[in-house]
Image (tube, rainbow, N blue to C red; front, side, top):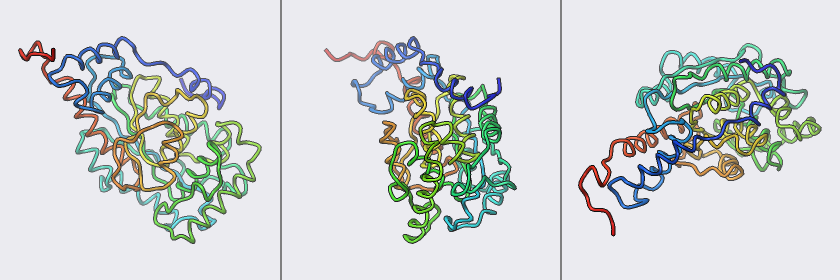
Length: 337
């Protein structure tokens, strides 16, 4: 069923299905019986149980991971907030389609199905310092693109993004969602200087002031300060929840989109883990606000879903050990007295 309105999307977030307690219990019981000291595989044990609970099955599977990228352009780039011109978004989408980007190589490495969805790249969003980024209809169309991009046969989902200027948008969303100003959330993004970060902070503050009356409603924050790729990522993350597909979150931009869901319903991201913490300074703040502990810290700030894709390897290892190890009884190994 397509999302018909922002209120409909809000309802989907508020009605996020719970985990499968029976599958979770079975995973916990198997984990306790495996040939290892209790807790000795650390986070790998937690990941296998989490995967089973949110896939709604035991044993959990890692057979059909999906990586899907959403690309959007932003009118706020006219304010000089990026080191790269807006046409790079179109050029990078072509690179994705030709298999030449970092995320393409990671998708191949972990045998993940890959797709990219350009979102009206010839029509950037409105400049958020002058008007709302999106109309309600535009926002809903982007949400539906994300919702419909999720393959029901997937057993894990990584969402990523491409969009020149979108770290400024992410910082504006973070400030609107959790408080603070532009200086608290702005970072280097694609590599702007300290002076460039100051410009970003000023632009964010102007946008926050203009849209002050919208900041009590997460759906309006997304519409007024966000972008098409943000709305699409939010749609995909929530579709995965309704389809029983665990999600691995990527960096600052993806997490800012997810923050809209969290602000609407603090349980809306329980099916998500943070694949990594990026080098973008606002990312660690966002993860703390949402009580997400990152799996990896590799000083990455590329986007594209790349950090989350690397984390697929950790999840794959967790499930391989959980499913493939022998139990004490099966191996004839004596348990601890």
